[in-house]
Image (cartoon, rainbow, N blue to C red; front, side, top):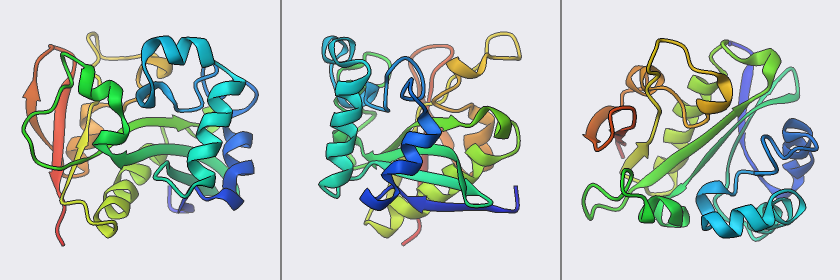
Length: 189
């Protein structure tokens, strides 16, 4: 999409995230808190408590992510922050750290239904790499999901697809599960 503009989520852009995510908080009351809390916390906080928690991160100036706009309207989201801000990654058997290098991580994409399949996720991923690099990151990781039979329902592809990461210059560095590669991109300074 040539008319996509990418901006960091800031307190003044919070209403745009609410508009994009809608009353369901993207999917199932997540509000992009899945990776930031334990499973029991997430389950207990689905909906409004997750919304409040994400807004708190944004209001405090924390690393939350990027919004994509088309013709001034929010059409996509990408969560990108230092990996330690996603404790669920640390506890994952499949996505545990590859080594002790400091990395940033891109963990989630949410694209408005009318804009899916038009490259918005790819634009967000490229912008996420720039965003991380500009904040001192030297390595960006992603955790896409590999479709088992060619096509994957959108709801299950929220971490992205390997093809998108490969096209953005990422390389697979580890695979502890058949459908879940760990991909990295070294960010030039």
